Each structure stands twice: as structure tokens, then as C-alpha cells.
Length: 471
Image (cartoon, rainbow, N blue to C red; front, side, top):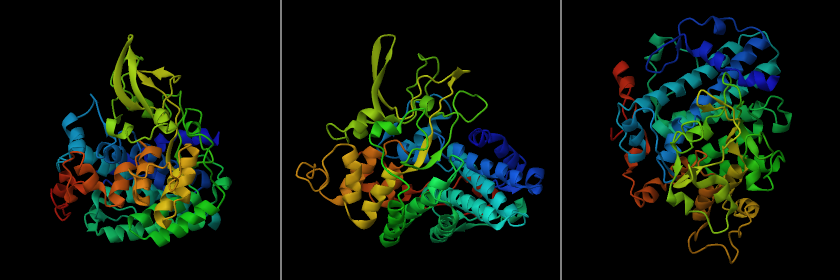
């Protein structure tokens, strides 16, 4: 019952955001009786669930991290008929305009997600509840806020830092802070979360953040900042915690009934078969754009030949991740697409398959590859390759001519192991490889295009907000 209650929380998001006056940050609750009346543990549990429900927007298959990491990388293309096509193709073409409606939408959704965490943090301070419970709530909200700001700082760079609910008037005084200050806030949030959150084995409500989730994300933040020593320290704690392990087979990770395994570090929960619950949209959105299965596929993140050809001969992860095409009335249509989130038995309502697949934001293979990146030790990378039954880095049969350094071996491994899991562009940015790799593949990328523009409407509403160079 607790799991179902977690899923049925879109209502809470509506309660927490629908009464907000639109400002350039979209943060301002002018009148929110739900927030004003936070008193009991049940009140806060509802609000906490609402904050977690923001993940459904941020990690939507057509959300900001999907467009950034797949469409702006060399992993994916799209054949999508819905929405404003010109705005969508601007991500792929590196031609983002300040008036791009989706960039503004993603900005709004990101700050609304942060508000949902901030309102809980604000109200929990004065609540008459035991200190341990309050610390647990604060740790979860600071984990989510750190996660959201980490995505945002990689997308926009300097950002307005908001850690408390603001009125509309107050929000105009909050201007962009340097990236360094944003990262300081992220580290502060995640360090607190890592100190106060329970181990994964003590989590009783599926989908709640754990100590290991905060540590893994903090390790990725440290790597992004170039602090490999700090990253190695915190990621080794995850490794030595004995909370996580690789599943025996890569194929064991995927399927509508595969949820919260020992490999999962932080996972977004979905409930299939119910149109009023947050069913998973990955299956439909990533299916080719046709309707012969009774629903229109979105055609989003269709796999490039370049990604398909990245896999080594005999790598079982390729066939577990990518379909070569589909059959339409007996005719095979060659169009590669992702299949990790397939749910062919999903109930269909109103032309939508109500799929049941969860989405892993952080998993143990990711942490192991980060640990090799932080330490320079291929041992952790080789654990991932052993699971895939591929030769280890350092063995004679490893394709050393193609990946002659450990850094290139890790880059290759992350691309194949984590394909279409919203990692690629952030990985290339973190290692300063985005411009050379993507330029060589015909992308019109420059150093200034490594950040998105600040939406024009934001700067119209508050001219004191500066624009990123190149826009």
C-alpha cells in the first residue's frame, strides 16, 4: 500500500505548484493552504511524495536530460510528429534560440521541482516532530535539490540559487550565481544527505533516496569538478558498503516487472496499467513513429548507426538495448530504436500503453565506471566487462588499438553500458571531450554551445538576469 501511495502523488505536485504565480523562476506560492497546514507526519509524507513526483517531469523521456544527453550527443536521432518540430531539432542541430519554447519549459519545470523540495524544507523546520524524522525528510529533499541543481548547472551554467520559498517580488532580487557557487550548494546538499540518509537495505518505501544514492551522485559531482581524489573517497564508500552488486546478466536489468534490484542505486517508480497513476511513457515515446501496435510511437531517441557500431562483436548489451527495426504488415522497416523499457503486454487506454517499467537514474555499473575514472584503476571497469563476458582492459584480446588508454576505454564502456540512459552528453562534457568527439561527427558544436541559452522570456521578465555567451 505504501508503494501505491507513492505512485499516486501527481495530485500533490498540483497542490504544490498550481497556486504559484508565474515569475521568471516560477517559484512563488502566493496562497497555498496545503503548505501552510503542514503539521503531521502524514502531511509531510504527502509533501515528500510530491517532491519525488517531480522526477517524472525532470526525467520524462522527452524531458531536459533526455534532450541534452541523447539528442545533443551522437547516440540518437528522432522522428517525432508532436510538438514544435523546429524547437526540437534545435537541440540536435546545436542551433538553440533564446526563444526556444522547450528550453523555457525545462527551466520552468526545473525550478518547480526545486520549489517542491524547498517548501518541505521550509515547513519541516517548525514542525513538532521528532528530530530523527525531520533529519530524514531534510536529507531526502536536499538529495533531490542537489540532483536537480546538478542537472541544471550542466545545462545552463550560472544559475539563480533558491533554497527557500520566495514571493514574486523577492524572486526578482535573486540573480545568477557563478557555477562555482551552484556547485558549492550542490555539494552542501549532498554531503548532508549522505550523512543523514539510511543505507539502501533500510529503505522501506521503494524509490526513496539512500545514503548510497547521495554518495554516488556526490562522486559524480566531484568528478565533474575535476576532484578525482574526493570522488574516489566517496565512491569507494559505496563500493565497500556491500549494499549493491551487479546482476548476473545484463538482460536481467530490463523488463516491466524488474524493479529495485541490487544493482539499482536510485530508481524512479512507475505503476503500469492505471491511467490515473504515473505509468511509464518510455516504451511509447521511444518506439518508432507508427501506430500499427494500436498506439502512436513517439519516435524519440531513435538509435544512430554510430551508437550501434560502438558495441564490440559479441557484446550481449547491444541486442538487449537496441532493436534493428520493426515489422509493419509483414514489411520490415529498418529503424533502430531503444528497447530497454519495452512492455508489450501493457494495457492500452486512449491510445497510450500504460507501461510498468521503472527508470534508473543511478545504478551500480555507473558507480563502478566512475570509480575507475576517479582512481585510474581498471579493476572496476573490468567488473562491468566481465558481466558482459568481454575481455578485460589489459588482456591481450581487449581492443586496445581502438581504445588505447584507460580514459578512452571508460568512455567506450559508459557509452555501451549506459546507452540511452541520459548519460552520454554529460559524460563528454565532464571529460572535456564533447567538442572534439562531436565535431568529428559533424555536429555544429562549439565551446559556447556547451550551455543552453537562458530563456528570453526569463530575461524579459527580469532584465537583470544575464545571458550565456554566444546567444
